[in-house]
Length: 394
Image (tube, rainbow, N blue to C red):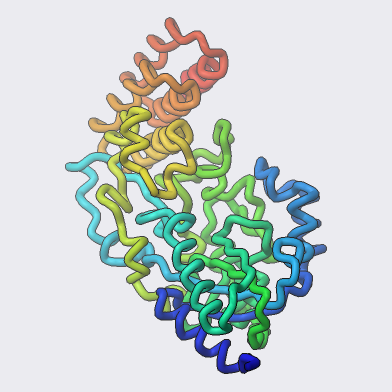
């Protein structure tokens, strides 16, 4: 007996919500309308070192989702909420003068890695669809893990509009959502695209971005984005951007925090999978910079923070320490010895180099002495360059 498309679509959406997806919409696998816009973004080099975005294979697949699943007839676009960075878990900060300098972690990364938390739900939803139609259903699932222009798909599926900060914004729920997609060879009833642009004349996100990475055409220069600098970038953070990174050690929430749609509608609670782990959302910087590889791997098992790797994470910690103390957001006794220890003994040259920069940013006699002593024994040329630069800034 043929399956009624409307009835099937309604039951699939109900099951998706039961599985914890607050946003559910359906679109077709037609080519993206803004593919040329995306190509120009790549040609401008705004993707930085994320070469996987610019490969010919990835471009071809983004141009036609059917290359990901031959016979694809529908794309189910889903969103799951994560905690607001202004939630109670983040509001009760300890006194930094007593507990030491604290870093900041983007709120989507407080709990489990969505790459591991969501695929099981997507497969359960695919099994439900197969049971509804009475046969196996060919499908492919993605959680920010495949060559899809997922925000455009979400807009086409009626889930919201793409804001000036490049985030998908739902008119009643805000933008604190992780997106996922389920490509299906079953035809579901597509939703109407969300056509309205409700950002209006507001430019709060552009004005609030510390590095000025948000561009006027609803794209961003990833090379200047704090999330890119603290997660995707594998080398040294450009010196001119380090002060603007502030105390962020993994990702950034600023452009979403200032958005009126989040301030008015976003719920502080998220899916339980993304509730804060111990030590998050405000990690103790002086403690974190001493993490060994084993400590890092154990602490951040199944956490998004593993993506930065130990060297990248401790690089970020060093920069945040320097900024927190230099700007007066934290007392210096806990931070300077931690930075000196990293400069003297961390096995990663990148960590030692950024610790040197942080000491130069803080300044003072203790920092100068530590830098001069390190210069006497340091053999890595990149680190020596950082030390010379730090001494020159004192």
